[in-house]
Image (cartoon, rainbow over the protein chains, first blue to last red):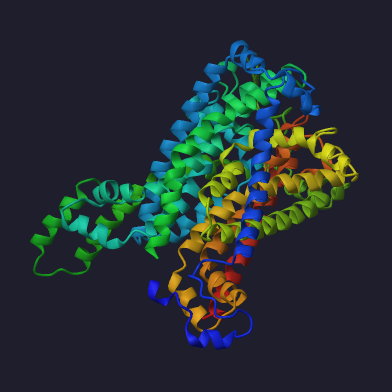
Length: 301
Length: 333
């Protein structure tokens, strides 16, 4: 590959005047273009960062109108909002509920999606196309059609106000996309690996479980990240299906707490930061895999 | 069908060694497919029970006049049976051409279409632009990538709330605008500004997903193609047009389709930014939720009818989109 870095003669004649014979390694751009790229990325990065940093900053101001006078916050930085939110609510109960619900949804959803994705990727069974198609269509269902019948169904089954009910409802929305995603990832893993496993006497499920799943770790990480993130702070379903306050998930619980205390935006900001911390931690754990997943895809080409 | 199938084929194979005919082949394929079916069974069961059944039930509701006053419910210990009636297609007719249907449906319809088109266009172009930059050999691109994924990594519940504070009257956005002597629209109160604000927030939140997907796509384009193009004297624009874009085709077609579906049904951004207020900025999906859950009495039947209309629009769109994809693929060889 490195032998082709020098620009051969025909290319030079094709664009003769534009750039004189300065040879630059492939993939490197001129200093000006580089500076421009950095400039654009810095601006975009700041835009991406600002709202997140802003909420963190506002959460440190003690008064409920502080967000209108950000300058004043600097003079009176305090953690009192956090103290209040952590001390005066069922924060840890709600936190536990949210971890339980989104954790189980993630593990269950990714496992189920992985088996489906694998089956669709490797086994051309009758009906695999309709299945992919219906997985796609499932994502189009607006919650308005489903939420009322789901509510009556869960109440008939006695699953209203229970973790199981919410977990099942959540799974219906993440699983289809995760199955799609993982099917795509399994497609990039050579079939020879499966065949080798079969020759060595593993069952189809054994090949999947022991050979393919470990190789698909980056894909699984992305799917897990997606599921966890979607449901960690989900409000409409959780607030409709969970009725008693000791079953609330974090986002629902904190929202009811804040709306009880007329527009105390400082407290709301602190709760928002508290909600963001676990998902940021999860992101940090996973992002190494996200990156390896992407670079693995690149080297595979 | 039981677990024994796998062993049985082996035994059956030895017994019928002389004539490995159709029966044997069928048996083998059954054994193979049995695994496939077992592996997809959980998904099919969950989706069948929790999506198909409610969907059928939901479609039935749209043919009735169900609302929160006449469905089966419990008050204390008294069970009140459902008393709603079958009304045929009255709900659909009422939504589509009943009195006031412009305000109730068509204005939201137009806004939803415009919203989807603008948002997906911005997501894709900005995402592609940033992905192209991140794909270059630049110092610190790991840091840039981390920063740019941030809007995706923090729950919308949190980021939209932050935007709400920033966009409120006297919030940081308007403070900046006023120091620049620019007009300060009421982002959360004026109809036009609400729409602009919603598009802005949704674009901010949706670009990272596109960017990461397209970055993955860019990295899977073989470098040799660029070398060959360069040798043939292709300009940067030609390399982009004839190597990068075709290389991104399959990724693009998937993420654009998903983007359209998700943006069309985008609930969180509007709901968390405006609540059930802001009637002008409500998309069809949030409007349907508002009918079903944000008012009293709750109009379940109309809400579900909106949902069915939404779903039909998406299915029609997807069918056309896929046909269009197939046609362009043929045209390109």
